[in-house]
Image 1 (cartoon, rainbow, N blue to C red):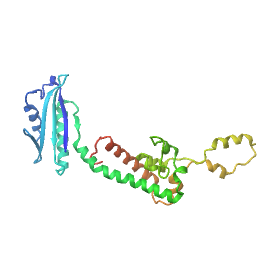
Image 2 (image 1 turned 30 degrees about the horizontal axis):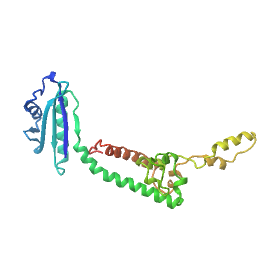
Image 3 (image 1 turned 180 degrees about the vertical axis):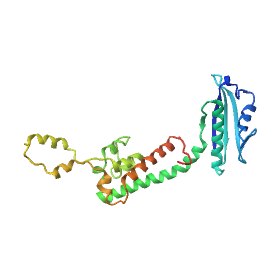
Length: 257
């Protein structure tokens, strides 16, 4: 794996401003007790990593150092992570500037570990909901048991798979399928209008009003059969969605993630 940083210094500060040689920059990193920077490698806590280092001047007269630190995938990941953190800390403190991360090798590594897990969980949830709904409601369960928000989230040519709409929706829509309230009775306006013709003495049955109450699919089908709190699933699915988006948009994951 490779991590690449663009480290810049304001020429006015007279720190690491020698473009012709790397001596100043190397001396800067070597002030750290656990870091020993040589020509083609950097050693941190007895582990050595290959590096490439290039330098030059930006159009605003800033001096830049393009530093690439490599590591084998079977290396001590924690040690590599600590080294990267210390390099960033030293350079940001001395330059007073944020380090520009050109490539996050560590984040890429954790993304490669995380994606198969996310993939399996997502498809397991699609399978669980689809199988449960088909068995509980019937073959055409998607027609009458899918919230409008979920149906409208599907992009494309308008041709939706009738037997299993959940194969086409985004990750977060699986949660919305379970926890978005909806009613199958779309004639609520005509019911309200019908009240105008009734006098104040007439009685309206509760059973007639209940037809217009919105429920979630969780309340309709799952709540009485699944021994799990809905909020437990909902909050964790949203957290998984955030992690999935990090992977999909190449933002990188941390070890904690």
